[in-house]
Image 1 (tube, rainbow, N blue to C red):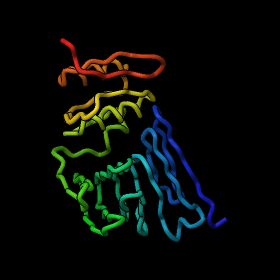
Image 2 (image 1 turned 135 degrees about the vertical axis):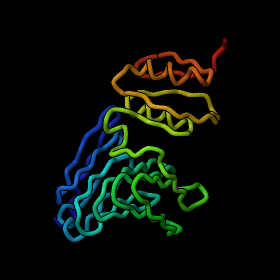
Image 3 (image 1 turned 180 degrees about the vertical axis):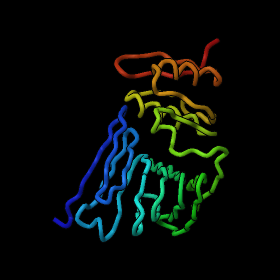
Image 4 (image 1 turned 120 degrees about the horizontal axis):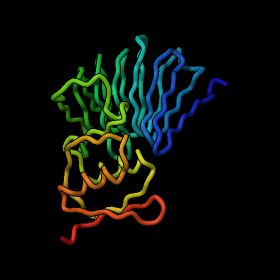
Length: 215
């Protein structure tokens, strides 16, 4: 029983929450996996995460979030972890968090309203957020981007709406802006495509094609 694992999967198009044994809570974004060992919890507060989640951690012994690229360690705080593929970004909302790279072992400590991002060459870059946020926008059905690669924006829309978007190869554009998830995906695609001279069309089922404008 000591190796018993609680696993939670949040599919595309869904947000959910999970309460941990010490009363800490985790809000899971779409397409996210979370797991932990309940019988070890009060010896070692550790979870594994692949995806994106917002943590409200009760004060106590060290709390660790393990992902394939890095580990985030806190005592009691609120923070958001984005760990998808080769992308790893942590935003500290309250308290402080320590990021540790899995392979090279480099570390950085984040203070409130700071964001740490793993660089492709190794190590972390730290950015001070312009405005203080008590929680990430997605927990309020708002997706927010700041100089994000356009491919990642389309991937996030896929997750939030449970659709497939085929995009042109080699997109290098970046996007900054916000979208409410309380609107039709077609509205979001129209707003997103316009400034990049792109168009979209709905194909069979839940598949959309994005392509360069012919006008």
